[in-house]
Length: 113
Length: 114
View 1: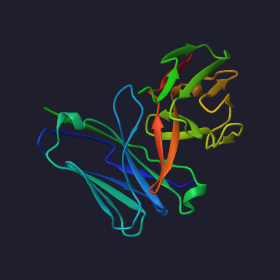
View 2 (view 1 turned 30 degrees about the vertical axis):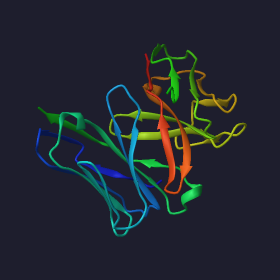
View 3 (view 1 turned 135 degrees about the vertical axis):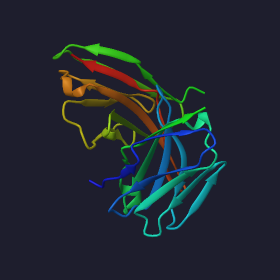
């Protein structure tokens, strides 16, 4: 089983601040996804990164895949209350099409107005 | 846009009781999944179905059975519920793109086993 550890587990910051959350593993992944989950709902896919070193931007969210494809980060600029939620990373093993997603433990983010 | 629909939303069972969680998707996806979500443990795969007529075990299949009734519906059954099965259960379906598999989740079933 490939383990994905996310840090921090909990993060509470003021509106307007910047933040970074991390997703780390000792295993190599062929791709990595980030999901956001709001209370009472299922996770919703935000982005998929595939290439080592890849950076993707989604408005104020910046996602980076590590060069060695073992880790990823999510940076939020000028956080808004609407960013509040559980952020989950999920990776697919190096055999890509034959492997299922492994989910991380999540970072619960609270943005204080 | 219904997407993935799960029922019921909440359920309380006594130890030993049985129940079936229902899931349906209207996106014509081949693959469907059942996950459980527990605090501090992320989402863990229980069973999945790559296509109509096939099912496979995931990471934590013990105590569960599944049925892929048709392409739209994938149900999860607890034959004899145990307190360790208290969790939030999510059904998902998926589609493949150039970037890999994209999962679409239902809104979950919160199950408590007393």
